Amino acid sequence: MADTTQCSKGWQGFRATIGSDALASVVVFLVALPLCMGVSIASGVPPTAGLITGIIGGLVVGFLAGSPLQVSGPAAGLTVLVWQLVQQQGLPMLGIIVLMAGLMQVLAGLLKLGQWFRAVSPAVIHGMLAGIGVLILASQFHVMLDKKPLGSGIENFFGIPAALMDTVTSGNTSLQALYIGVLTIAVIALWLAYAPGKFRILPPPLIAVVVAVIVSAVFQLKIKYIPDLLANPADINKIWSVIQFPTLEHFKHALDPAILTAAASVAFIASAETLLSASAVDKLHQGSRTNYDRELTSQGVGNTLCGVLGVLPMTGVIVRSTANVDAGAMTRASTIMHGGWLLLFATILPFTLSYIPVSSLAAILVYTGYKLAYPKAVPGLLKFGKSEVAIYIVSIAMIVATNLLEGVLLGLGLSLLKLLQAFSHLEVHWNDDIARNRIELHLKGAATLIRLPKLAAILEEVRAGAEVHIHFEHLDYIDHACLDLLSNWEKQHEITGGKLEIEWEKLSSKFHQRRTGARKADTRIITQGGHDGDIATLRSV
Image 1 (cartoon, rainbow, N blue to C red):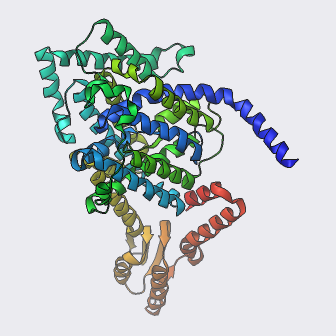
Image 2: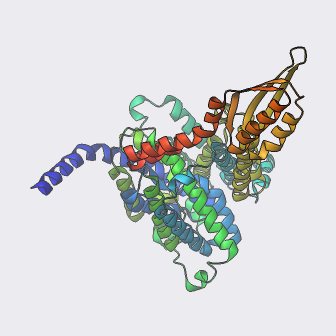
Image 3: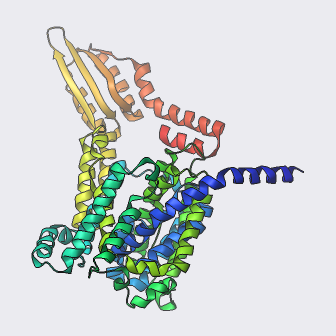
């Protein structure tokens, strides 16, 4: 009887939400369709490979996800890394790399490491996204002109003026491609600003692509279309032809250091972007909160399947996820159904891809890159100090100058150095009133074992018989070693006729407060239980 009642409630809940979820799924499908192909082009793989990744992201990851309203698929954040891997290792090895990255994510999720991926400094995350934005903009600007990217991020970026000048002066088909690209960006911007209220639900990228298709057809422009990017243009009607199953020969190289490093890079960046996106999605709705370990595991399963099929890796994507929530999605059914719409399109309507200009899809990514690269994060980072902005800028510069992995690693290294500096920085301000035989010492920062020699040297300079007052209002923390130093020095100073005034109880609390805070956090997690308790503990510590 209980099972029947529970089943009845489940059916009623499904009926109550299916309408909203179905509408949201259509909106997400329309957003995902051009982005899946655009990301594929930017990654150096066949455009239809991104559609297969999107299908897996909807039908598989959508069913397993720990963030029910997050949408997964090929993401702009991985385009630069995937493009580099395709150039260095070749397209056939991409599947092995993505497969191994997926297995790493599954293992990380099973080991409950989901929360740790969220511990990456915001300055590094924003720097990573901005650096990716610069690289996407620089490379796709050339594609928007129906040209090939020049190579590295620096070459692409500084090669833009020359490519633009050549396009304008030559007046060939590249100029027509530029017109379509500019038209696409203009439509996106105008639709975002002036679309009528009832039509705002329609995604700007899709509207822009439709306009570009119509204009290209009416004027019969001799520019590149999606089939031109395939080895065999006839394969546009055979979307599954892009699948490349790994062979035994490919698996023989799976443990090569270069392949392992590449897989770890994909796993780390995909996980960081996914969980950052999941955290942002949680702020957009009032439903179930994200289970980060489950989300990480589901992403690993999705990427493992993508690796087996030899297509693009996936992440949780904030643009599609935001569209999902804004369109009124209530449950994971919207994400799953969007994968079904992509599958239906790939099966029945692939011939429509023949009419889509490459420059239009590239223009969408140029606009996306600009939005990522725009330094909107700087004011927020400034609230936490100029050092955060410096880490942000250095991360961007390193990513553009070298590659994504080295830029992220440098940013992480700088963040750790900042943390070490914060826990080892100690300032001691000295004020000596000789007339009153009184010395004021103001401590600021963290008095730890690392700075004990500095504190001891200053205390040794105190003249015998002086009255010493130590102020610690701006002291963040003091460890046992420095407490012991002050206690022993007080006894020695009193022998010389001097005096030390210090509030030992309050100073001792600077040592105990971290341990007390940890015990309170442990109590809270035991009391609350569940995943929300984990988040509360992480933030309090």
